Image (cartoon, rainbow, N blue to C red; front, side):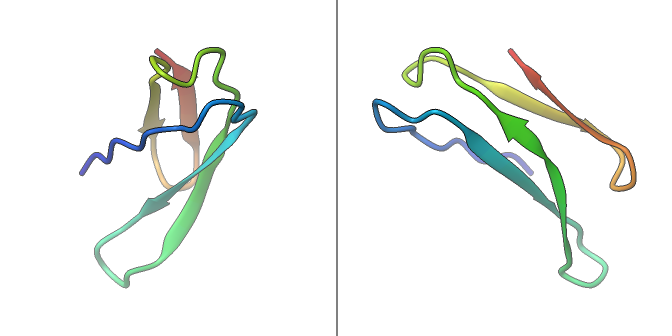
Length: 56
């Protein structure tokens, strides 16, 4: 599942959390630092025990 979130001007960082289906738990993916909140995309990948967050 993917979610698009609009960032307000002046946003300096975004914390990304993931969810898994088996027990509705969450896990921390990473913190992204957008350079242009209007057009920045972050991509989450990896696994729940070794997640990655990249700027796209």
